[in-house]
Length: 295
Image 1 (cartoon, rainbow, N blue to C red):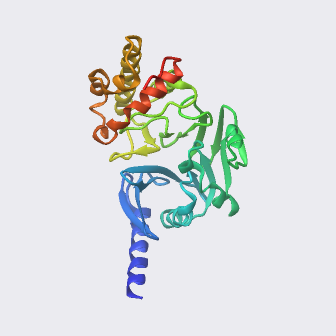
Image 2 (cartoon, helix red, strand yellow):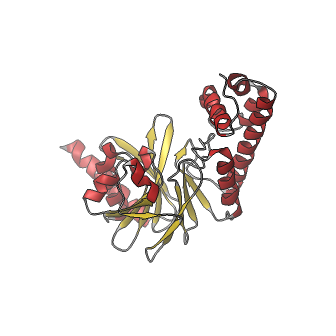
């Protein structure tokens, strides 16, 4: 009984601290054995993270006057814990779920919240993947919460149904999996040209006060425009190196192991962990450009 009381007291104190704390506070909270990092951006925006092995997945909690907008629902198996976390930091229920794309982390728990009355919003192509949404859009959709104006915009990067979510008052951009600050992205069905075009467009609209929140991350919760510029250069240099070596007749394996490619990626945070998987990015790039994908 004492341990149950202590756990309840810890959660209650955490909630009071988060709700009364200044912007940019970060804290950990454990619910049902799951540890969440919660970073407060301002009075009504939180970026929460959940660990899956060495990777952390970000999701957003946007607090309105009587309900919360959840940016990415995370996995169904953890939906009750996500719901409890939202209640702890906001005192309000989840009323809207924004689905960034068809990767499971972004939509798996949507049905749970939908069954409890939440409105699920996402790109119209999600329906073809069997993902239930209540409101679909083609190019963009704007949701006015009063305290925050939220814009969902379809992007050509990562998946055919991908969207980025911009909190216009707070200048926070949830980029989903089309940008990450620790490693390369997978470009998806539209290929690397579309991926690079997305990064260029994101750079063009980035300002000194913009907070970029990737879906997948390593140590760093969110990024700046300088981080985005660096990632864009690395992705561009990677593509250029792969294209050049492919024209010289090297195989995908030879390209992935070359210093020309490895040297481009070595500055990335998770290089040591993910270097063995470079070949998969090389193969994806070559497949989209119509070049030979000899192993």
